[in-house]
Length: 118
Image 1: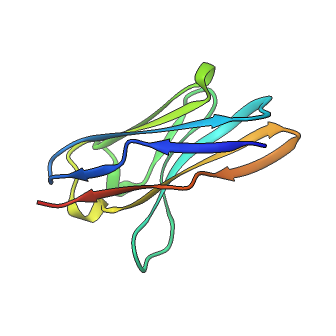
Image 2: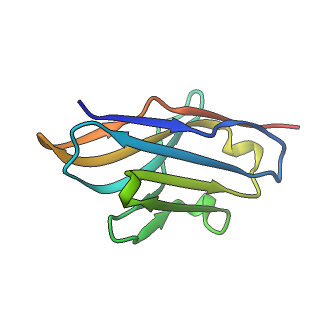
Image 3: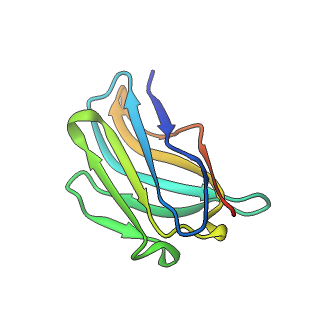
């Protein structure tokens, strides 16, 4: 059974930084795209950033220049460095990955809360 476990969320003041981590574990042969999504109360889940196995990245316009996604394939881990955080970044951040093990499936983590407030 494959699991994605996030960590690194919390409360931070506007202008501050956080680093989120998400590690995949279980029966894994390889991992394709890894991504971070966010979901604020009353809003739809949105893509924040994604990274291919080879390191190609895509970002939502709202986070370009402030957030950086990266991955460590040896550790089955994806990171999201969040700088210059704004109150509108407040949301639950969820990890997502395409994982080959017993078949190819898309997996979600349980989410980690990020709150930006003074």
